Amino acid sequence: MPAEGFDPLYQSSDEADLPRELLGSVQRHRQHLTALVGSLRAAGLPEELIDASVRQLVDSYGVELSAALRALRKDLAHV
Amino acid sequence: MFDAMLHDEEGRLSALQRLDALDTPPEEPFEKIVNLLRTVLSVPMATVTLVERDRQWFKAQRGMPTQETPRSISFCTHTIQEREALVVTDARLDPRFAQSPLVTGAPYIRSYAGIPLRTPDGYNIGALCAIDTKSRTFSAADIAILTNLASIIMDELELRLIAGRDHLTGALTRRGFVEEAEKELARYARKKPPGALALLDIDHFKAINDNHGHPAGDQVLRQLAEVCGAEMRPTDSFGRIGGEEFALLLPDVDAPGALAVAERFRSMIEAHPFDIGGGQTLKVTASFGVAPIEPCVTSVDAWLAAADACLYRAKRDGRNRTRLAVCDGGAGGT
Image 1 (spheres, chains in turn brown, blue):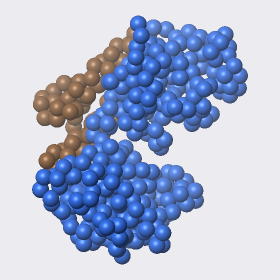
Image 2: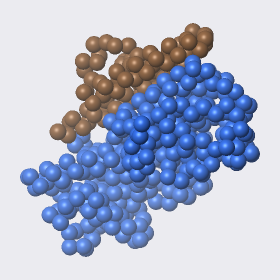
Image 3: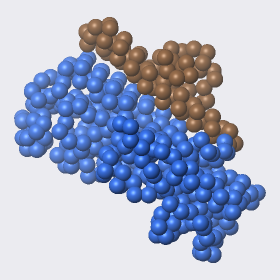
Image 4: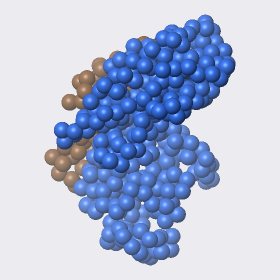
């Protein structure tokens, strides 16, 4: 699970807590991951490979997102 | 239809610079993507390529013999001229590529599929590429996978841009730091609070890279950022301004206070054992230039320049020391 327990693949109430700057990014990323799953299935790849691949991408994005959240919170603390 | 964005080379290069993604060490998210692409498309080579004015640089790559090539021989310079995929089934039969050294010599490219990496404002800053050493076609499903992965790459790059954060050290990027300094200047214009900006540069950093390798240099950069981050107040900002140059923004601190803070940071860096792996530690020092905010500081560039002049003095005076600017051009320090 990505840091801070936020999984960008799934829509949840967590999004209500996201800064506006990040919400659009999360939504776009979810759309792109969903489209990727579709195209990997269309290419006939095994489900296990698809699951493992998407999980890696979700984790990478989750780490970046957590770091972005920290940075933005620090910015907010300056205001 | 004429697409003006595809012909705005200066705008494209500015968009690429804003991403602050060039000449970095390998980064995990992009390494994962080229690995995945190579697996799912069964190609020997995959790249995340950024196209600068005169070169293509591989942000991540598998199977290529080099980290960059001249742009003039690249496939990607053609890919970024389009909105759609560029597919070459046999490069030997394509007059654009038949004489390219990448085709006539290593890595002997025969087929290529590239999708532009497009910023939200419409600039193609590079391409995601699947490359083979044999002639082949790429199916619609292959192109769809490439397209989706290219979008995911841009998600990652844009997220970093939003955060204004340097991936290696976690410090603010230059852009992010400048934004913070601009806020401080604006606050100064309204209320005239004290404040200071310190630049620090790691002494003999090139020798660290040369003698111990770039991974060791990266460790030093990361740990230096940690040392400074642990010592900062919540209201301070810390940014990576250049390769081994960092900046510290100190709101509500007067000149003597800023000099004392910089000295404390310098001493902490000097005392810290930098772990570079393999049981080895390095002694590292840094030089500091400190510029208090003054009426003569009218822009962030001027503020950085004042601090940089003092940093230069600190280097010239023997390194591992701090110099303080004053508005009349003099400099004190320790």
